[in-house]
Length: 226
Ligand code: SF4
Image 1 (spheres, rainbow, N blue to C red):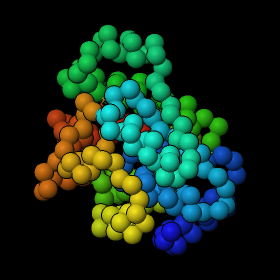
Image 2: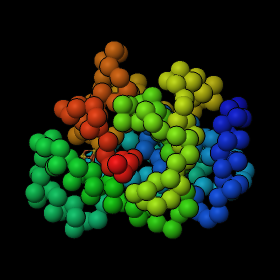
Image 3: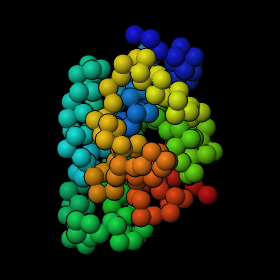
């Protein structure tokens, strides 16, 4: 299976220098498939793969989850939100209250994503993401290697400087499976209430929280302390 040796070597070089457990956060983006492929190509150590099952994912995402596990021959561990927190959130916001204010939306992302992420990263030395600087105005300063102050561990972003063209060329050459909604004009995959298809001229993150200003479009998983 062909792959970008330079990027796999970058990941291997970092993993050789880090002691302790490393996890890869999989959120069903095209980028994550490539990051996972690179993580599987390195031989320094096994990397645990997890996803945040928010309870509001598209039905297609569950089917894709199973397809990925079969393709890579792995288990992708699901971290789910705390049930009492979800009940309290739903009582307060109802089904669509996350669209009514930025505060509501952040509350929903905290319960369904940020808190489960903290649990997923507990005891880890580093995590690997598929983030790219070109994805959004909130990610322009992204580095391949960072310290995640919020979660207190190293963050490795092997695709930080990748372009759209490079990403999809890699996927095509390595015959990697994509989330089925990419074929229906989605350019980024998230929760069903907060993600829509986009027009060809719209940018990658335009379909995420489309009622908000671009500088607010983060769910809290990748925010930096300022
Ligand atoms: S993306 Fe939307 S549904 Fe998902 S956790 Fe955030 S606010 Fe809630």
